[in-house]
Amino acid sequence: MERDTKRYAAFENILVFENYPVDKSLEEGVAGIKIKNLKAFERTNFPLTVSNRSGKEMSVHIAFETSKFTDDLINKILSNFSLLVSQIIADPDSKLSGLTLLSEEERNKILFEWNDTAADVDIKCMHEMFTDAAKIPDRTALESGNKIYL
Image (cartoon, rainbow, N blue to C red; front, side, top):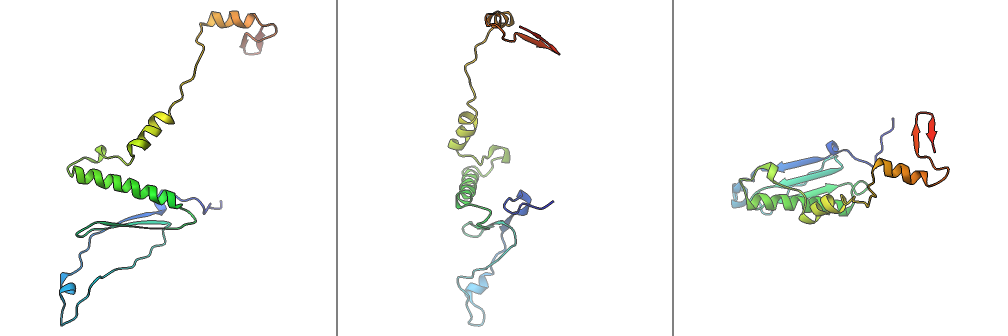
């Protein structure tokens, strides 16, 4: 079976939390040599790599294959991540089960807009439906196995 390369599986992506400290002595200098604005460049072969770096501030970097991810989807991922981090900052003792990735707008869309399946249904008793069907000639009133009742 040939693999569809335009689609991706969740396990083909990677989430990286980097918390290794940069030695302060590099910034302060050793033997008269100081290193400032140290930056690392890393590359993976995953279609989506989300890297979180912590220090005085936390930064998030996303690298992705443009053939597999749209800018809108990446912005959505960043928005969801920002919402998640905001909840943790607001309540550091919160349980994972109490966190959400959905904004209130998204939650309402999923629970109410997409789930709005109400339909007007003419509720009648079975005998009323038979009576109505009997008023129309040659209309099937009941089928049972191979038998059709008009």
